[in-house]
Image (tube, rainbow, N blue to C red; front, side, top):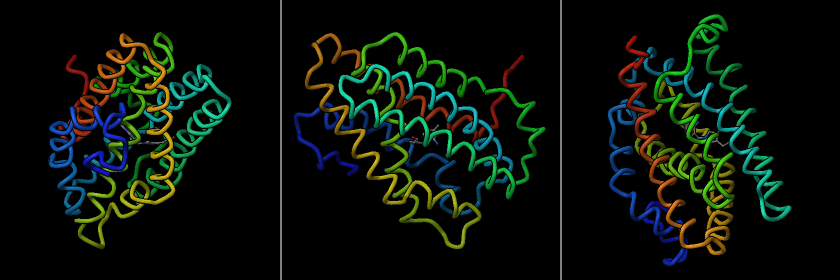
Amino acid sequence: MSDGSTFSAHSFSAHAWGRNLPTYEAIRTMPFNDALAAGTLSPEQFRHYMIQDAHYLIAFGRALAIAAGKADDPDGLVQFAEAAKVAVVVERSLHADFFESFGVSGDEFARTPMSPVCHHYSSFLIATAHAEPYPVALAALLPCFWIYAEIGRDILGRAVRPNPYDAWIDTYAGEEFHEAVRAVIATTDRAAAAASPGELTRMHAAYRHATQLEWMFWDSAWRLADWPV
Ligand SMILES: Cc1ncc(C[n+]2csc(CCO)c2C)c(N)n1
């Protein structure tokens, strides 16, 4: 799927994937993902990532719920309402399983605010879902699904096992997640086919911005980034 070839060459998704391939490659080879696959990522960096991801997933769930409300048919409404629920389920499993095994207390989570990048990405998704029409909202949400599916498979293929991050790797490489991702790509392509030229331009801008923010999210965890003042 990483060459976009599963989809029609004329689809929005194929164009968006192709245009953003250098950024995808930059994500795939970034130190955070190399170290995760090698099992050498520090627990401190993974804890930073998990805490920020728990914040992110709630915002992502809200953005999905807003997009669900804008769906142009009942199937889209169900698809994104269900995805919003899954985002919260994943956040709860971070709390129940990963926080537990990597020693993040409820207290530490409660006193750790969103990092600058997490704040930016979360605000961008919620603002886009609110202010933009359905196709543009979906374009902003798509990289989150698609990039994780691809990165999950890539890391699975080269992970050193056993790996302290096995459970994380297995979550995103699983077939169930990939099926959901294919469905989001298909719905986004259908919405793009009905979008105006102006909306299509904004879809590409939203997709690009979200892809850049995915890179920045991992980079932020790698650097243990915090607010400078
Ligand atoms: C920064 C960041 N980006 C994407 C994901 C991936 N992800 C998590 S839950 C879910 C589907 C929810 O319906 C997806 C695609 C993540 N965890 N963190």
